[in-house]
Image 1 (tube, one colour):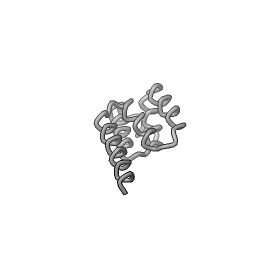
Image 2 (spheres, helix red, strand yellow):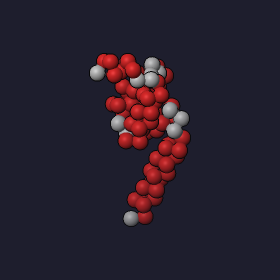
Image 3 (cartoon, one colour):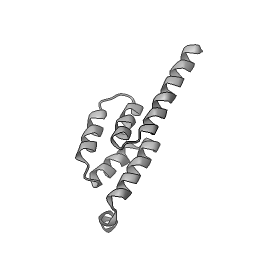
Image 4 (cartoon, one colour):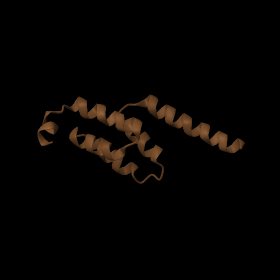
Length: 88
């Protein structure tokens, strides 16, 4: 496994981090950010861990990875859910 990690480029880890946003696997995102040597992203993810909602933590990571459309749809889905619960 060590040889594989050495051969992976930053773009591969960045792609895996983006996939981890879509699947909401923050443990995978931590590994990806570490292998990307992205200290700011790792710090943002560590600070976001204090948030109680998983979607908020994922949104912080998505913003850092510049996945603005993902953040927009996550917030839109959350607002739609709030509207539906208010109606019923």
